[in-house]
Length: 211
Image (cartoon, rainbow, N blue to C red):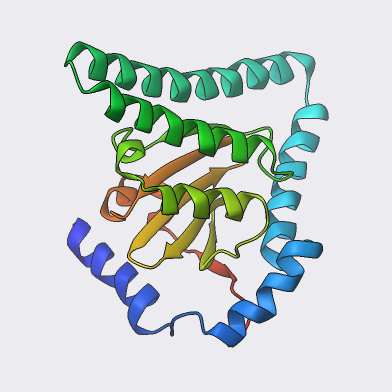
């Protein structure tokens, strides 16, 4: 069942859609760096809607959502901490562990400084991906969250967003879920995202918006 969806998704991304041209990137970047671009506005509206829905709800529900969201954030952080502990127990070279932790720190710091995602928690679909990132990859992620790089594509589906960053031979994926205030990271392999139900339904591309 996964194979046809995977083939369709790859086809939609890489066959029917032309790569982002230099002229397109130049057209997007000025707005991305100075004023909110269309995709950022859509994410900001989704974030605001969640906050408004929660604030307009009954106190019991607001408290429930507060606890639920913070639990989801804590779970993501605990999973990554547990992964680092496993590396120590396996006697992984300290240099490698420091690299994994440093990469995680770069993403967390960049996230905290981004207006759209500063309230989000971060988790990794597979924490080992944090160890596979190169300095160029983390630099690209940092520049993206600093507003210095435009995403290759942003797809919206059921109030969640798939943000697709392309850097030479690296593909960086982020799923932004406003309802959970959580950003899920994955590196290179998109196949695992088909476990997310929202990617199996109708989706809409919201960036880039030029030919």
